[in-house]
Length: 296
Image (cartoon, rainbow, N blue to C red; front, side, top):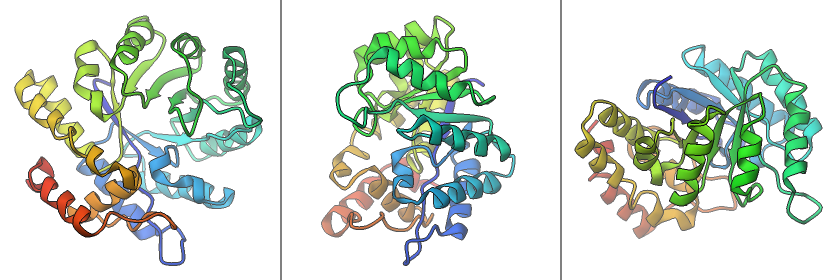
């Protein structure tokens, strides 16, 4: 795998808040065919809104995503849960369905306080011992723990951790982790959209982000790999305002509105959270018209 995009398809819901399986299939096809995802994430990141699902619905989302990918790309299954026992149960389920890897969020300490490095290592080791699948360490402070740089390096050294996905926008942190994780040979390091080009230049492996931003990212990586850095910069600049200007609505809401703009129906955000609407939606559409998403 050269520079890659790891893409989580959005989760569309019907009016009665069931997973819209037909729309999910269309969204997965878009992620595979247009975004040209290197790997697909099933029910793994917060923008996929899996947190609102029951345990059985979450399993359905995992299975239906794997079925929709239909072997066209490796699938990484999100197994994150505060309880390592439930994470293990989901890991076993992912393995049964033919997943290529599992993704596990470094958890908050549900009883309060910050988890120590030793506690985080024990948590990941507890899951890794029970699964044969490679593990993607997922770092996202807020939904998960705010893991220090030294603790992140220790987790990346675990034998089964083959990938690190981090949501930090801190270039100092990102650059150090690329050197101490990727360059040191512990795991492949994936950043988030604001730092894509910087991460590529520093020797990181790529990016994890939802569609349709993932289509822009894929084109930026293509340009960088072709040696057209000027073109890569132009594409990276499209992330300067998108999605940041509309983030008060939340990432899922912005990406669902952007998907609808290009004709990929991903439904509305899970209630009670509002979709991008009114003047804000008009402004989003006007901005998207200036990006490569309008040149399709």
